[in-house]
Image (tube, rainbow, N blue to C red; front, side):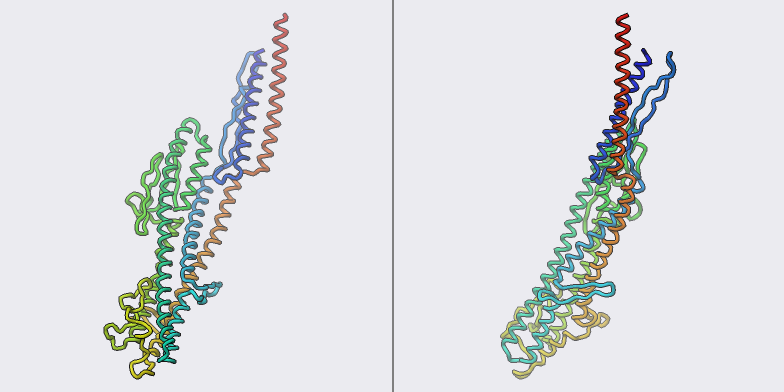
Length: 466
């Protein structure tokens, strides 16, 4: 009698164990498209045997659930995601800066070139100097003078428009970083909260808080896309999150607490009072593009505007007569270049001599082909066209490099992610195979339970009848 009761208990435990295993497989299948989910595996544990008056009896079995997760592969995925996000952020901002020029910039493996468009700065520069060349050929033509004034206005407007567009690109970068820092702080708090929950849940069963660990890994990967981080786990299952500072690692999350919140100011991200040294992530990518290539482009255009103002004023007003400049001498940047207030088609002069003199118009037109040198005190090197061509080509090359980096790094990230998926990912084929195995075992346990139950019922009936 006692043997049957023990066997009935074992059969019931077997039913429960197989039912739990089926539930684990069902959960795996339900999360097959969840990128933060790591495959869960049921492990059957024999509870051992005991000696009874009727001989050895099994105590049955239990089921424990574990994750198929590799800390090394998780860290690799976070690292590659951080690099990819950094390159992608740079690519986006550089493409915006390139578009701000309004030029057709084409790149190949060997060179980068730009083609002027009607709305581009290059065509405006050419049109301005061509207008003076036409005036030199027709120094008394009022229509030619009107064209010079008109093209000068177009040129200054285009300089200012490009500068405003580039300033907006930098403003967008700052907004992205500010928003990213806010998101990072939220993720840090989420990780700290999950640390506390995991430590509490796993107090007597280490590694059992599988769902909470999935959530935490998802948060960490989102954080890594924003900035590079390092993770270490203590014996309670809590993660310590650190980032690189100028003189060493800076702790961001310690156990259940955010040790140092992030802040952003003037191109620098700080954790608490410590400036961070971020080599990847979208935050660093946005800052790098804004303060690097985009700012270099704006600086080059400022130099170009200053050179045009200085050179044209020198040619148009060779005696440096007060009020005689063509461009406002105070506007020597791309954002401030402007035609002098006294210039109009009626006041414009083509020469200093008789009505047919074209010396001034000729001198201004010649500025287009003048060779400048910074070593000689000029603002640019080369001609105006060549300097601007190099400037446009440089941003085109930067975009081309960013495109290549994003493509190559995306491939690397895909490889690493696939490596992790081979360990942590859910395979529907495998899960269906496991499901059939556990269902068969469940049915067998059910039949065993039913058989023992019938035997007990018959035994009880016989004992009652006797």
